[in-house]
Amino acid sequence: MLKKLTAMGGALALSLSVTANVHAGVSSQEAAKLGKSLTPFGAQVKGNGKTISTGLGIPDYTGGIQRKDIPKTYTRPGQHHPDPYTADKIAFTITAQNVSQYADKVPDGVQAMLKTYPDTFKMNVYPSRRSTSAPQWVYDNTKNNAIKAKLGETGVDNAFGGIPFPILSGTNEQKAKQAVWNHILRWRGLYVVRRASEVAVQRSGAYSLITSQQEVYFRYYDPKYNFESLDNIIFYYLSFTKAPARLAGGAVLVHEMLDQKQMPRQAWGYNAGQRRVRRAPNLAYDTPIAAADGLRTADDTDMYNGAPDKYNWTLVSDKPVEMFIPYNNYKLDDPNVKYETLLQKGHVNSDYQRWELHRVWVVEANLKEGERHIYAKRRFYIDADSWQIAAIDQYDRRGELWRVSLAYIKNYYEVPSQWTALDTFHDLRAQRYHVQFLDNEESSILDYSQPVPGDRYFHPAALRRRGR
Image (cartoon, rainbow, N blue to C red; front, side):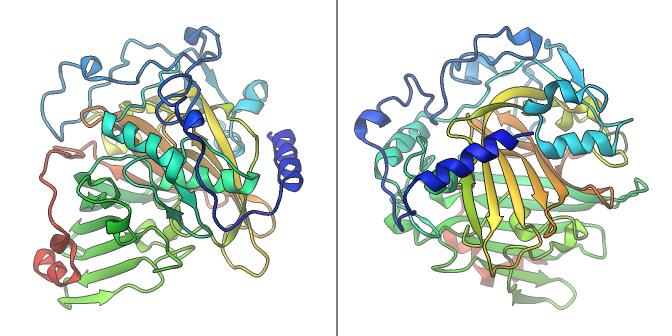
């Protein structure tokens, strides 16, 4: 699957000039298409003209989920989200037995999961709902970025408060990097507090939860700043471990940098037993994450993050292609679904997953000669509406498919913001997987209603006091 597209991408890359160190935005005439023939984030407004009830149709974009569309049963911040699409029925199901009929629309990694777990993993395909939405000021900033944002070798210049490159432009490699930066800098709200669990599910199905409270302040989206005053910071991330008891009291603080070659990610850890704050070195690239039991690397987190300098980047097709990806996965957050039901051997329970046909940008990253990383090749499937990476195929140094990452997209419609219900990371050989953001059994989920704290709240000197 995608062999023809890959060849096309390679031909495009060869036919274009060498990538410049800096690439500016599009013309004001091109940017004027945003909110008209293009969505505010740059996707095609028009659908594919097919009936959506068949599962093979993509509708026109009409603004995504708006206030009027929020279920009346949603009444307070942090509440689990009632599904706005409960009336939708399964159009058809893709299994290991019939996946060949849809091979050109199923990511390679997902096809491998169907073959690895033929008796339990399936894709229930629902009518496609283009639910992506954001505040108007984010759309306004995105249009401004389209004209002014510049792509550097390892960062982005003159972008703030919106998608940096809603209309991809330049050489093939520049477009590929822009698409990935759009994911890294996508809109996910301003400040959020969340209590959730992560877990590594073993081949036997056994697992042990690690529960934490996480706080993220997306400084890049704070209207009181601009690109110059950001001081190279995208966001602050703070996490306190609540359970199990042997880990409780520990904390992690991260200052996420925009250009991590200019200044590497800053991270600190607080050890409750030692009552010491220590700098966390090398929290980047393929550093294994301890809580993930080796199933997630530092740059796997949020599907992909950090400096893009270890890879050569290629846009596989010069326009988005239609693919089945996880979308509108409200059932995975249902408080009536317990973890023991959701966490099956090999993968999350397929009965609670929702798959839809959407347009995606396909981007490949190939490890540069002389660089080291456990993934020699990565293929990203990026939702054209939201710029959220929905799926990733990850290959080892022998060129064999090894790991598969899936982001189960949903709209946090009280903001509104497109993010994920769960992120999962699968090792096909070991038949183990890691899950982030489990919150079904928590009394509340993401809470966007809390006031934004100041920068001092995320200072390492304050980590000890709050980690006690």
